[in-house]
Amino acid sequence: MVELAIVIVLASLLTSLAVWKTGPALQHARIRQVAATVSADLQYAQMIAARQREPVVVIFNPSLKLILIRSRDGTTEFRRRFMGPGTEYGLTSMAVTPTTTVEVFPNGIATETITVTASAPGYTRRVRLTRAGQVRVLP
Image (tube, rainbow, N blue to C red; front, side, top):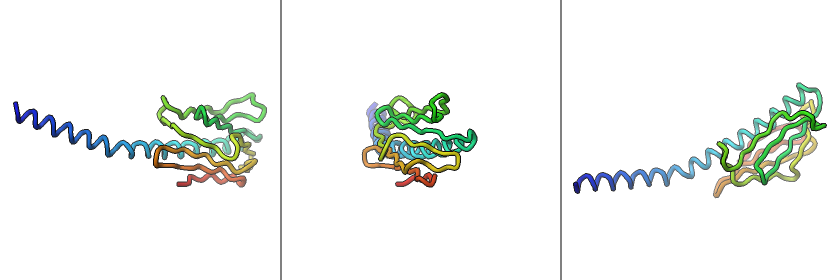
């Protein structure tokens, strides 16, 4: 009985140590996944604009952790993606500067440079869409 109790205590100690060490790594992986998804969505908006041969609008809502890609006149919605708690991304903090709306033209050019920041305690990733149409994931 004593030996079994010792084995159970050691197993629970090792399990709690493993969870404590892998928790931050899992959170960092989620933030990297959010950054990759935002980057892919911005490239998708460029592709849709080129395919439709008309500008599309990308709208970010940081409070809802939402990305919306729609036509300029608002009649067609191409993509709506939630990234907040309760989703596979579990994002808790999202910031967009300088504005939350950007228009992407068929040639890939955007109306302005926009930076989307996804962060968790102690870890941040930024995705930048430049006016020239370059999409980059920044540390």
